[in-house]
Length: 280
Image 1 (tube, helix red, strand yellow):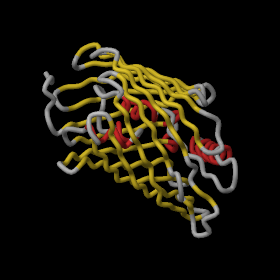
Image 2: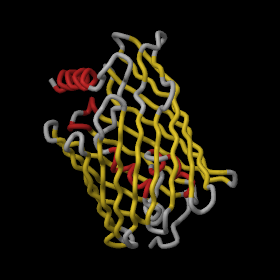
Image 3: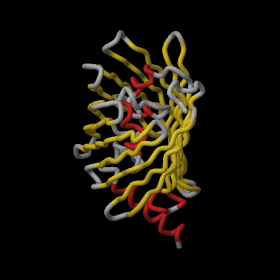
Image 4: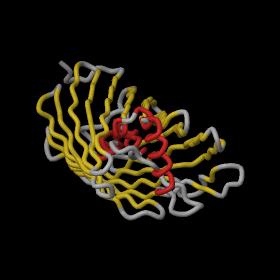
């Protein structure tokens, strides 16, 4: 019965998220802002920050890796998984992103390779090339290559703004290429009010969809403990999480709530290969 409901939901979500035959919308997992809004906060970056804006990768000072999993609406068949890794070099920083979502009846995956560097103290830029594909056993497979670009502007030590463009051209799917990934444009702001308190917000305009606003705040209770809460306007969803760090590791327990579809719990694990200076 759970399998039947998962199939039914997937078909429904797919149909509702494709407004035209030529525009395949991005299906962000509900808690995605939880791991990506930190792109706009210079004091809170981690291995997943560049997945929200590739320019955030330019500030990585040590190699790191993170894994994230979410059981969407408490259905195993709707689970999503992600991996991100950062590799700093003298010629700029590199990042790797892997995503998988779905089950045997329908699944989609993404492999991305990113590069970013600073253009002085005020501007960071980044670019990422992606291979995206989905698989439906009864109907076949489709895939596409696309690109996303990000830029961050450091207006001050506390205020950062940025723009992010996903799939501005191309991204055609399948042999007939009569379907394409939607383009998306984002503008974000982050404010580091203090060493312990940060605020982030993002305006997203995706092709053939209404404007969406996401936002979140984070409070650091101590070096080893913080909490984060936020919202996603187009679904009326909220998300929250608590993170615990020790030495060069961090574990976050998160969750989001959709008014109609319910709870989606998540788990995030991060490892930094260089011990932080303020680690206990």
